[in-house]
Length: 149
Image (cartoon, rainbow, N blue to C red; front, side, top):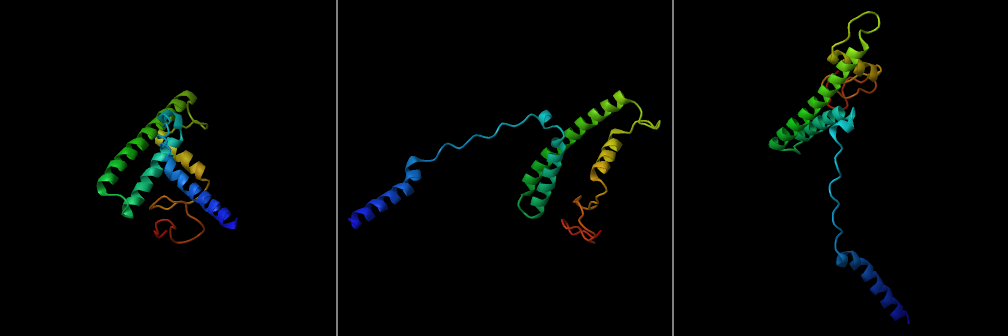
């Protein structure tokens, strides 16, 4: 009786192990549909700039060949520039609609407005002048690139 029970248990274990192999693989899901560039809004520029930083790092560590690096760099540079142009045109339209800034000063150049908004968003945080990483604490070196501050 025990031998029969052991044999039955072994056959069950073999069936469980062989089941995925005998069924075959399920078809791989297709690529996820891309959002239109306009739908990504303010994330578009940040995504492109993050991708540029990532491919710089991958090239420095030897993960990307020079040909792949050049191809990807040109693609993401164009993406970042297009996003900046969209932001600039939106800022220019808002400046034209709103008129001069409070205090009677003329409206800022769109680039100056972008710099001012980045400084406001930073909230007094410091950043590395070499790689742009946010600085932590009062150390003398950047934790990302090792540059002396």
